[in-house]
Image (cartoon, rainbow, N blue to C red; front, side, top):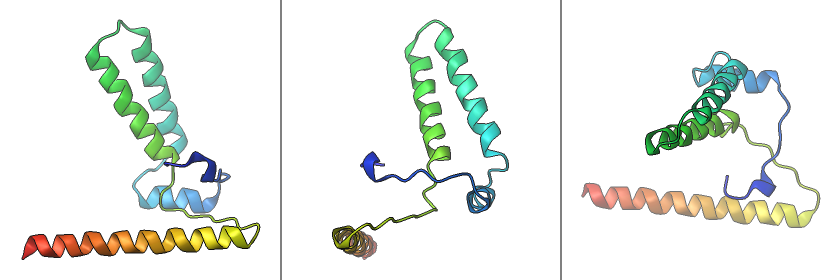
Length: 108
């Protein structure tokens, strides 16, 4: 999520529930609530480096649960949006090819 301005909020839907289930998450809402509760509990305790690291890991987990990387939604309002998406897709494909080539070279 480098550019948060380009993230689209998706309403709670059956597709999102299916994606969660496929990823092994049965009750996303409960899991998110439990993580938030745990963060609040730890914040109330005395501060230490260990607790700060734990809170950081919990926030990372919370973000990964709330951000559905397996769901893609694109909104195009004009031709510039289409051009931007095309360039981004080509750049991503090019980067993937370079990574694959590097892995192949390491194997040789």
